[in-house]
Length: 473
Image (tube, rainbow, N blue to C red; front, side, top):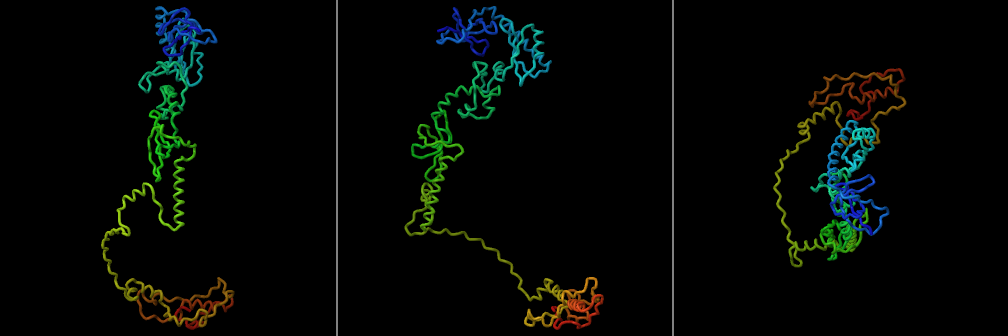
């Protein structure tokens, strides 16, 4: 067994082990010890205590207790460190180096001056070291530290309202993961679970072991459990500190109910696999399928209506009034409709001639039939297949060429036509009357004349078929 003491060189930092020799040291005593960097001034954190195992390498010894002169020298070094820090920052600005100097530290024996800085990447500070060595006439050393070490050296106030743990009592940094925040049911918002340094809060590690043990005694979210009354449900929420769970229960009538029960009163059934529907949803779908199958069987047997059971059926029975066997329910009277307004009487229909005069249709019909004979009765029309009374059509191949058109007869002047809207005795046809007859006569003559000849003028009745006076030929 060996007797050792624990010594710290900064206010907050790692505790190093030394052998006290014949000295009996207590917590708070100041001592001078020998380190790999030289002679240092430190504070005893752990007094004399014994260890069972022998170290692989022997511990360095404690040289002596600190005296009043040593304490005055330490206070003087603190003042010199402030001046050295300001001078180093000024040189960095002159050199335009992308770095931030945060602290300066003298060794106890004035053999070395340390500067701590932060930077995003590597910085070439060789010229800066030369400038500082020329000013202080001592060995200069620059050390780059991370954001966590910067916060530990500078200090500050946390989101809880207390001084930072790393600056007051936390000796070393411990690894912290997002899994610790999930186990403690904390918000995963980075602004709420990050510290001043921008990293995850170191205090998440403080209760991580406790939450890990409590979570091991609770079912997980999404598990299927059975309650004391026999109902089954799915866990939707877990309260670690209260040791309770919230269960979504599926009742007999396909209704769901949320219950909060102690975790000790639940019986685990199965886990919910990732990417699959919950067991509660599967049971509801199976129950619904059974009801549909029962309805199909009832329909096949000739029964109508679907069976009603559970809470819905009880509510319906309670709402209906009790009536004797064979008594029909009274029908409610429908509200009377409002009387419709009477329609306006339509004018009586007159003769077609009157309607034509009123609407102007008769005049249009007269204009369309002007210059035509009266239409014969239905019985006087020739049969469809009978072509008697019609002129024979010329063959297509005997038509004249385009350039040899027959001369066109002059049309009657417009003044000879009846005035618009006036109905008088139908005028007798002129010698040139009948547009269709003229075209038919021209076609017949053109079919019998040789090319290069002109058609003779058409005379009245020449080549006109019988019974064509009505213009319908």
